Image (cartoon, rainbow, N blue to C red; front, top):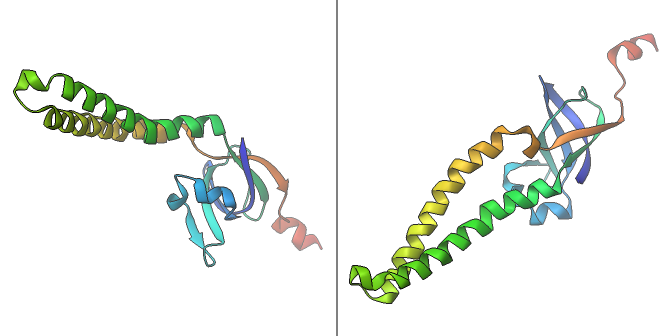
Length: 154
């Protein structure tokens, strides 16, 4: 599991927005543009699931299952390339049936299957977004924020 530490900025229902420092892992992340950067690009704010009840000001550890990340990466990047290649090979093979050149058949098949892959990814990504297992989560509270009640007693 990939983990980072940050401070909870705000919460709403079972969600929290956590401010973290942008790390070197962010450079290779396919979703790096989805995170909201601030402070000259060094800090970012990430929306995470808050099933443990963290509050604003808490220092928390957030995590994302790397196995799920690999699956999503395959689906988004490798799957379309595989369909492109399959389409090109099938287009070349069946080009004589449509009375076109092998090159034209290969191009039409490749682009056709690539377009099909785009539609499948578009449809499938909505299913990924609806599942909580594909979202980062607060795994633990590292340091509780001083509550307003304890500050009044001091």
